Length: 92
Ligand SMILES: [Zn+2]
Image (cartoon, rainbow, N blue to C red; front, side, top):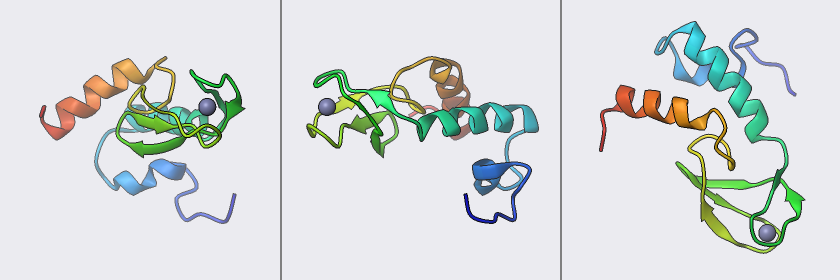
């Protein structure tokens, strides 16, 4: 990972002063997980999923696009955070 000015909050630094540290730590953990490999629901290969949009993922191997968790392809903690994020952004 390259040098970052946001060494404490990591990738979540982009949220600026918004959100509390608790949420940020959770997001940080999830984002790290997000960058790791996930199993494709179609071709079953363990690959790095591309996040196309909020909750939409694509397998780079077979090109399969699927709806998953807002933060990670497989919804684990994503459920809790999606609710929090929706509340923060105002439910659509
Ligand atoms: Zn696939």
